[in-house]
Amino acid sequence: MSSHTATLAGYLLVLALGTGLNALAHRPASRLPTLAAVFTRIMHSRTGRIAVVAWWAWLGVHLFSK
Amino acid sequence: MTAPPARVRRAVLTAGLWPMARGLGHPAVMTLVLGAVFSYLANDTVRAGCLLAVGLALAWDRARRSFVRLSAAAGESTPRTSCRAAVLSKEPAGRRRAAMRRLRVPAVVAAIAYSLVVAWFQRYSWPATIAVAIPAAAAVLIAWRVSADSAAEPERLTRTGMAAWALIGVGAAAWELTALALQPTLGTDSPAHPTLSYLANPILASVPGRLAALLGWLALGWYLARK
Image 1 (cartoon, each protein chain N blue to C red):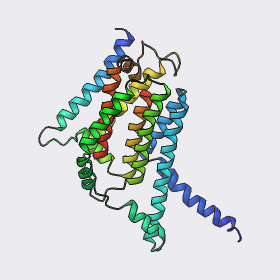
Image 2: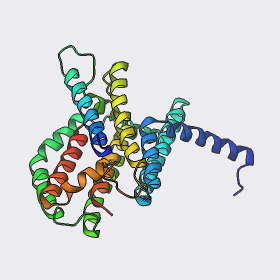
Image 3: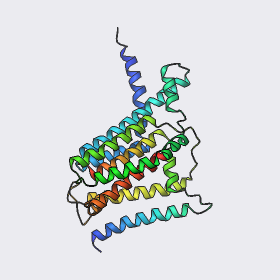
Image 4: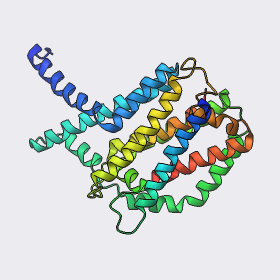
């Protein structure tokens, strides 16, 4: 397996784990929080809300700007 | 007017520095500071500076609010008390969501129009930089201006659940940073160890790809603003 494929596999594994965890969290009576619930909890505070918005801003600037 | 004694100045400085240091330990602030460090290491000085500035401003903001709370608890009736009221006011999420519901159609039209124009700009060109930096900076400034600690009791999340999500987040960050570290230099892309940005390059090279990415970015921003 080339290192390119291995790196891609790592990203896909993380994506699969996240998707799986979110699916588990959506089951009735699950004690796991959904990703949306985690974000709601983080953004419950002013600090968390501004930090999340700053990361969102960074993402756009990182992808498109000099 | 005489300057306060050195002892008083030291006490004030210490009282301000300790909450500031504690503010830097807040997980949300730490992610920004760490992001700034890695951006700097990747020769991305401007974005590193922006992340660091927001992180430090948030640490200062937490220190200031902590000071205001202490002052209020001590019964000081100062203008800071009204500042506290503003910071902790119930700028209700419900009202914000209702306003956003009313704005949904014009916002969608504006987002499509914006994306259709900006998608034609070459990545990393000055027009693209300015066109993306303006809404990004505006969003942070608006969030700074209107965000308040929610007065509602936060939903209780299980430690196991939070730990599981934290593990996935840290795992993703560690994998991305490993790929970054295995590049020939931190500023040089490597097909053998692709970062997420590198993987996004083929998509963002075309106008339709940039259009989709811009729409996705704006939709994510809208979703976060509703939270």
